[in-house]
Image (tube, rainbow, N blue to C red; front, side, top):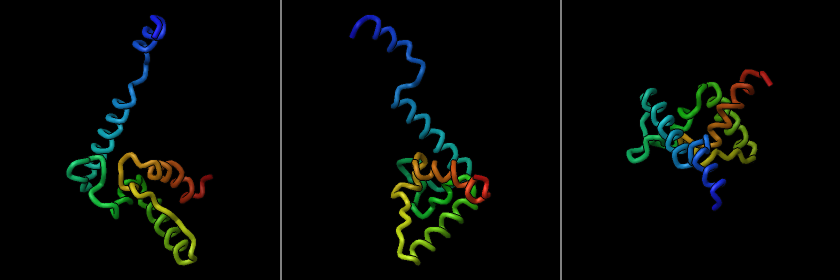
Length: 109
């Protein structure tokens, strides 16, 4: 590593990945705690049970919409896979539902 690249590494303005992920886990833990949601004993950034995944969404109407679409897909024999870790506070699928779901349920595309 050259002196220039070492200097740049020490001036890097963004947190390292480990610290960034710790910050996200702390935020998810705080959110679940503030809402009084039961969490995993070892991992407070994960809801206690997978069935609690709707609590990982910001709007109840989005969870209801997803449950309705999932049931309709199952009845029609089509897959509507929900992520194995949808109850995880850092779930990418939950993030997508939180970002796009309100636009869909409010027909505000």
